[in-house]
Image 1 (cartoon, rainbow, N blue to C red):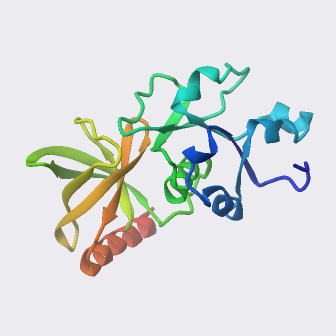
Image 2: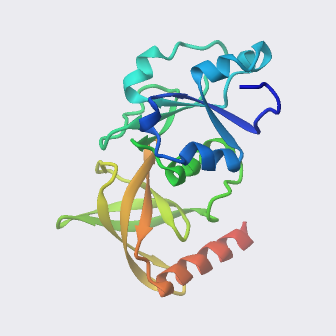
Image 3: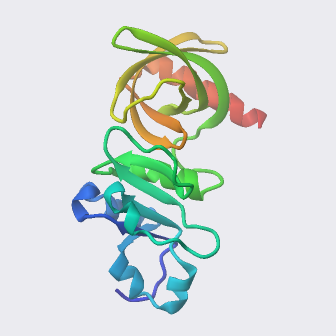
Length: 216
């Protein structure tokens, strides 16, 4: 692998190829995020190796093999199972289920690296919502919101890949009831993706996001 040209953003994967979904590396590279193996990273030259990657993508089964680093630690995104991670390791900033798909990884990478993430526009919020699963309902807080999903802070654990019902209200639109699935962790919170959102609900969320961005 040639040291030139240098990728805009360099990430090192400590995971088997099958832990990342097919075509994910190719698509992310087109978006400016190049994922290389440890061996490929070592071949890029001493200057780049000293600088280190911007993120390590680590299978949870390989966490013990990641050495302590001098200076500021490199953020770690963990590839995990349904139960996610505990956040006990301060280097861990997020987690996604294996095999990691492009959308989930891209969303986390954006949240970690970019001051203004380039996913669907989202705004910080503190909206009180109700979460429901298998007849059990509890209160959660929506910490950020976009047309595609939101970031939840929940007192109850949410397994990755879990389908939930989410109910909340927005100004000018009244109550919304959405189906969602937990897709990733941004420790200690949980990101969910909306499913089968109606055009009216999507428009209501889009209007809320636009107005909130204008007010920032």
